[in-house]
Structure formats: C-alpha cells, structure tokens
Image (cartoon, rainbow, N blue to C red; front, side, top):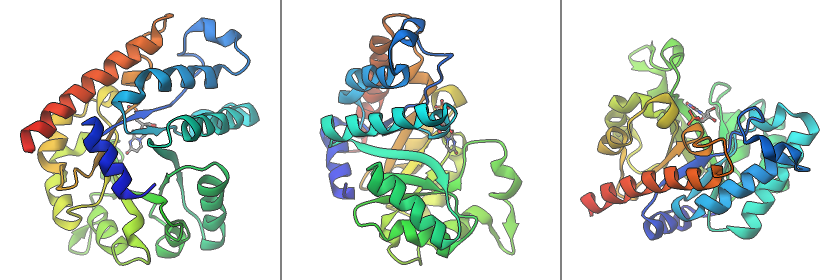
Length: 273
Ligand SMILES: O=c1ccn([C@@H]2O[C@H](COP(=O)(O)O)[C@@H](O)[C@H]2O)c(=O)[nH]1
C-alpha cells in the first residue's frame, strides 16, 4: 500500500486507529476454544466488527509464534483474510526483526512477499545494512523502533551518545539510508512529551504509536505534539479493544471501544481542519 492510500483512508474514516491483534488463548471467550482455529475465529470476529473504525491492524507475531506451527497458520489465515476482504486497511507485522543484510532480506521476503503484510517493525540496533533490505521493497513500509513505550526505553534510547540522545541519532541517521521514504517509526504514547522534538527531526514521517489503553498513554497528548500535516500517526490499542469483554458479546464490545477511539480521533481531526 502507498502512503497516499493510507492517508486517504485516514481522511475518509476520520480515524488513525490501529487495532492490535495480540491473541492470547487464555483471554479469549471460552466458547471459541471449541472452534477448529480459535485464534483465527477470534480475529475474524474482531476484524468484521471493528473495520469501519480502524485504518490498520497489527498482529504482534509473538502471540502467534507462542503456539508454534498452529499459531503461524492462524497468522497466515488472518493476513489472508484481511488482504482479501479489507485490502484498503494497512497491515503491520509487529515482529521487531533485523539482522545482517543477507538474513534481513529473508525476513523481508517472508513478511512482505510470502505473508503479504504492508509493513513490519524493525530494530535499528544493527544499523544501515540490517534495515536497507526491508526498505528495498516498493510500497512496503519499515517501521523502525525509535522511542519505545516501555520503561526500559530509558536504559539506552534516551541516553546521550556524545551530544545527542540515541533515539534522535536513530531518526537522523536513518533518514540518510537508501529508500528512506519507506520508513516509519515507533514512538510510544507513554512518551508524549518527546513528540515535539521528534517532529522537528521527522516532520512528516508516519509514527506508529503503541501505549494508549492498557499502558496508560494519552491520545490527546500524543496528538497535541505528534500530529503532522499529513496526520502522520497510527495510534495502536491492543488489549484495550480486543479484550473489552470475555463473553459472547466480545466483538460488539471491541467495536464499541474502537468506535469511542475513532470518535475522539474525529473530534481531534475536526479541531485542526
Ligand atoms: O514500544 C512499543 C513497541 C511495540 N509495542 C507493542 O504494541 C502492542 C501494545 O499492546 P497494548 O495491549 O495496547 O498495550 C503490543 O503488541 C506491544 O508488544 C509496545 O507496546 N510498545
């Protein structure tokens, strides 16, 4: 998907919501466990109920890898279902990959070509040659971890290396890489006070923002400093939406949470236009 297609979907739906599909069999309604593929059945119901409020879905691969081959098959079915039924919706494999170039190119092939995701999260730690194989794919997006939502982000990412914090160096250096127009960045909603500085370095890049809902980040605060001319935000909520209810009404409850977030986004967008 092109960035222009993503922006036009955001403007059409007045939403920059990303729903995280982090499926844990201990948290889904018990009656679904009788299904042949409970993970896929859960995802399908959540997707069908929330698609009108969201512009992106983000399965975190850990939740699928944890169930071995069965889990990977559920992931495959989920992305196939999305691509066939909702091709206008942006898909993110939250896999946090990155290795020597030869290996990164295999990761890129696996997620972009074989599975058919629009984007993947990648760790910047191994540098340019570990990220450029992902950037080589046309109309596919590499979402680089810049300033993550967890407490441990303060261990390295905000530490100064010379004059400047590491996360700022990640942003500045990566802008120089080949095909850097295919880059987006992860910035946690729990770090809203950093968004103004981040926007000085990357004014229009898309930011994937996890950390609202269960992690306590504020959508309003993120938007205050993070909104760009092209909107430039995908705000993710996983547990806060998909586990809104553990009963037979789980999909309806997820839709209600997603709608509430979309309405808040709509009011923010109306306020700036
Ligand atoms: O900095 C980061 C990077 C990734 N994540 C992932 O996003 C979701 C958040 O889930 P919630 O249930 O909405 O808290 C999850 O997949 C994380 O692994 C993040 O939280 N922070």
